[in-house]
Picture 1 (tube, helix red, strand yellow):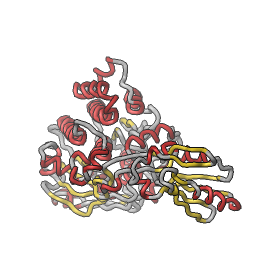
Picture 2: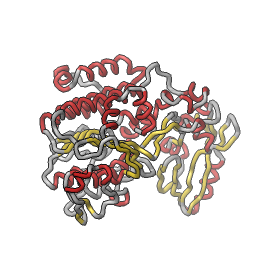
Picture 3: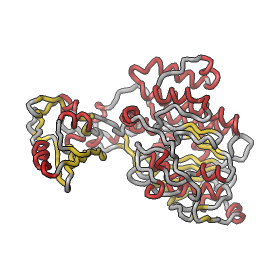
Picture 4: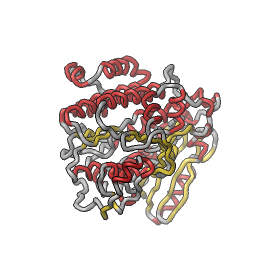
Length: 472
């Protein structure tokens, strides 16, 4: 999550753990890469390479698309044991690691070790594990309390309550795995902060929105952003308590920042491709793709103009205005909504209709209607703390591709010359730099095999979660 949010909550005294780590370590902005799509950005963070080299483009990518090793693959190759929980594109999990529990975009229950498949089942379905023995064996009283609140309020506050319970449960499992396996390197990813900021950033920055816009947002008596960030702050405190008395070098980072959406852009409506094409009833479509808020139709050349004429003839009945903007590019028609429909500037749009082939069709059958108050920004946030790092230091000029080279250097390992990132030497104390020169290797890709058992994603399930998060 972005620095303005964290700084706001630190000033309110809500994040004592992050405040202490910031004051006794190094912090700053971590510049992301556009387009800010989490699987691609996190793969850049964990490989030190940009997406042209690592091969991941979006949410429907799989682990089989990754063309180069991530940091834990490099460590495993050098017999340094590690484990991950919550990372994207880690399904099926790598059993060569001490543990690996895949992140939220996985659409199976696969987990390593297998005993935590029940947790993946919960994460995917939001169904509370039925076994009381399991619940009391693995989860803290805090998690059980959050699960109880989730069950009590899920009819009105399903998604935020789920996110709170899930992040607490994930931390319980992470601590269980740390105690059992004692990895040299480990990572945990919290995604609930992203969800809360998309949906509720207006709660902490209401001055960014008009009264009319504020009245359209989801009503809740709880400041869920504060609740989530204080939970994560306490989760980090619990992890630090486990390492008390041990040397620990800690990196806390986000893959991007957050900002309030401009008042005129809080709505994000777009075409329901499946529903739209079904009702067009065209035999001329050779291929179709949805890219952002546009749909690309590949049409038989001889029929492309007649299809465009049909699309251009679709008017919204109640306001007598065309629904779609269309453009022909070679053998494709690119379709989009007019901006005033995307941002919902026209009141009551959801209840309006169009006429197509003498059929009256409600717009809610053709469009997805979404609303959110927060959106990604380019500057993320990082805090680095530990015996080898500087104290109370602010660093500028850090990029997401610099993370893996910096981790490798901190562990005394060579940095790949083919990595796009650099070692952030300004983070380190002079004594460490004097003893440790940066070493290089041409590439860590040698011998790397792309995952041939990549997960076959359930598109419907993944789309549901993306819609829940505000991406669709």
